[in-house]
Image (cartoon, rainbow, N blue to C red; front, top):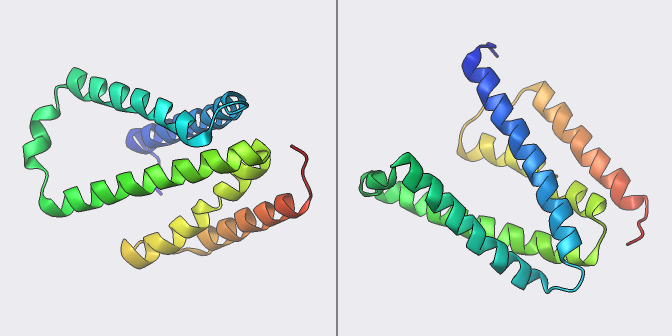
Length: 150
């Protein structure tokens, strides 16, 4: 991988996404104490919708909606359904189990992403990616089998 400004920037955005995701888990777990997990997600979804459309309007990119082709719409709508299901499942798991265990198992999505990106996106699989995936999966199994207390 060539390290340049563009590479640096996507890494910065990815780290910010990771930190934000960690905050989501901790804040959601704290907020789920006496709230149904589906209701909690519905409340947050209203904010997600409001904030994301505010960003679109601020960037003045809403006009490009008409340029999105049918195939992209299908992928984006499908991804929206998958995002919703993922979050509903995650919130249900968080309402029942300890956040450190839930998120460890949830993040094994990396392994599924590696497999699916090779199959559907024709991305190259290297020994480093395979080893990393095995380590992530091994770590999740070790943590899951270590026992937990809510």
